[in-house]
Image (cartoon, rainbow, N blue to C red; front, side, top):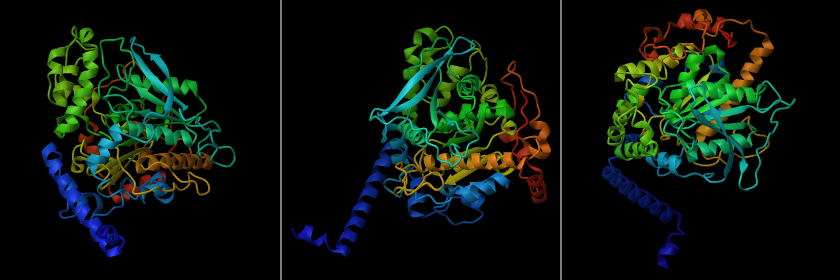
Length: 509
């Protein structure tokens, strides 16, 4: 009774909260040491005892800040986003314990608010080589909520897009397949804002039947290209945008580079993206995550073990203890449809940014420093974002892998009416959906201003004018991030290009 009475005293209650928090932190440190989870990132994030060298590279100062850093090439679109996309500048990311990178990551992969309530209808799409991929269309929830086709803008325009028909949002899950709770929450929020939502499932994943002895390679965009063409044929008058989750960015970035200005997408976003595939496979992942991903992929392979024994060493693949060995066993075989005899040759064909200079739609990448599944932030290809006008990077100090949990509910400016609050507690969802609306408004303004049709890369427009055919969809090219042309240009050239740059695309097909 005395203890309960003392807790009513504000000072005692405050000190009790601090003691419990400190004890919980020390217990969590002990658990992380046992599970071999990276603890140095946690300490730097929560206690600010040390400063990482990449802070000076990215922000130009040695001070940390809770505000995200937007790394971009100065263009009209970037400045428009800074002025009108308020969620990029003012997130209230959760602190420890809800903001712990490992707790956020496990929560986004294993549990979520709308985990079992969404309802989908499936289209099985027959591919050119006889394979099948699955497209799941969100149709509502089991709670009786039907997909709303709301008109959020005056004048009958949906979300600032070009037509009165609702826009289409294409979701691309992690490369190992399946709908994570993180992606389901994003799907639910997009439905509430009036999007047609469709989820891409590669062959052999998420219950999709496997009719060919071939799995989708990490950066193979051929299947996604056919899926996008099919979705466009279903909704030819709708604007289409795409969001990738984690390693699903491999095929999204490959698709944008291969298709260039002929892409049916208006904008794209990548949450916790894998920008350098080879580096990601070669970087050691914490054991608990590595074994989880390997277990999921081996489970998929074992389901079709008898079918694959004629084209690869299934027993060796099932005994692999690292993601690199598993991927190399599956893909670097002379009997596969796309033969790659060695690891480096495989990545010359599959590196996500191999054709980054051909991308002709705005791409927003959201990444946190404490992501336990990705390489350190110091390895990010910063010259790409500083020199390519179509790539923008938002870097936060915390957020985990596809986590970005908010401290409390926030209102999304511009995308809501009245005092309607966002039920989602994930900042990346709010930022991505608002980003699509702002980009659509910007491009609509460019259309209204009647800007002439120049090349998509301004003074380097000959790169965007290259004609592309479907006869050679996978050209062997060096990794984009290794090219000298990615060096940041002189300030004078940046200003000159900004004056001549136009966001109109000249279609090559």
